[in-house]
Image 1 (cartoon, rainbow over the protein chains, first blue to last red):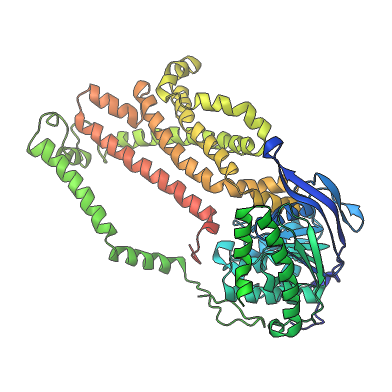
Image 2: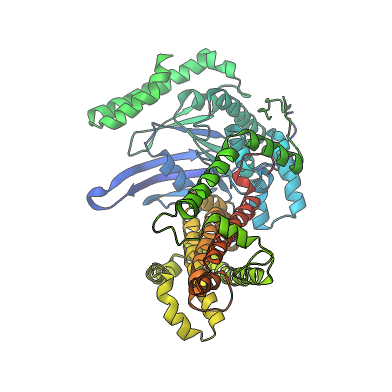
Length: 293
Length: 294
């Protein structure tokens, strides 16, 4: 993939948007069953930046992404894209989920072209050309007529990336997209993903619970508090791009990691003192691997 | 064999298996012949017929002595001059078969044309389901035979009454399974479609219908079974032709081998009709199988 060959293909450069999340709160249930999942959470997805949200599993990350995608409305607070408040789901904010949401009854090509075709913006031929261009980028051109069940996990994620990208969203949101992939495929996907981002510089939100992945990908690292979740700290990651895996051995990387770990520990201790045993166990499990290195 | 591609975009080993369907068929046949399945199937069938033969024609056990045995049935079935007028050489035999098939086709077709859209709509619109579901749930468990008097009152012409009964049998199974099919579709697909800008009609035709298809075909298989069941019940009560009529009439006329001929015929036709639906289903749902060609 050469650097000047633009990812957007024949449709001109992609335009990233800026998303502002201000004092967002969300709870589920009523009365004694009420659970505050997100409380007074504010942060910004800066235009053209890759923002990574990190927090322990179960801290409310998926709820947060459902709010940002517009599937659910916050109890209070505002979410705006380029200044305009969001109203429900839209193709300007597309989500790639943990679990594959490719339509099992459509081929790779049909899945990718579904969005533009149902919106009727362009002719089928144009859409298919653009789709093939993108599929070539992620090495799926030979699998255009395969059904999702015939693709490997990594291929499915790539297909999903392309299905989102072809709609030229302003913001891409990834909800732990590489979870459940084996270590090798995961590394490969991180590399694919970071290359795509470095080519198009679309505004990206990436949610993960793996610190190593977070620092490797991020321009900005937003660390969430434990439940109820809110943005605790933002760390600007000023590692050089294009990102390479050898970065993971540099002093700068270790510095960021140390910084993030200290905050995550504090969060874990807070959870301890509040007597939230299950959450603490979860926290420690999530980071024990990182710590031991 | 397919291998993940490297980052550079170069295929390492992308070898697509493309074989003709005929050679694939023979390959599968050969595999099947090597497995124990065909021989065990044959053995099971033979044991069944042997038991039938021993109990009825050889030992003539009490309760079995009046039943027609396999030898007398087969003799009658392939006789050019059958004692009771029904064999593979008589046109009457085929007329009975044809009449029954025609009734099932009409009833099953009507049940599918009405039941599938109704089920899809019930699953698609919650308010519509709230109206219709309780009625369906109360009508569904009523056995077909309980409908006979009302069917005769509604349709004085016997033919229509039989088709109506057969239709009822399959209609509920088709509708209910279609409804379950729509409800089985993962919410993630609706979300994805809405997110991508799909309008209601796109979601209906590209998500609801294909997503419910596996359940619809399960429903059609069950409903085909029900319609044969209700058909025979209907034909036994009223009718001048059809396999159900043939069974009952031969009983009255003490032509016992003919009963078994009609029963076995029903079994074979019922099984083939289910197999046909399964076959159409697999053709329509290639996305469910990993195999490169079907």
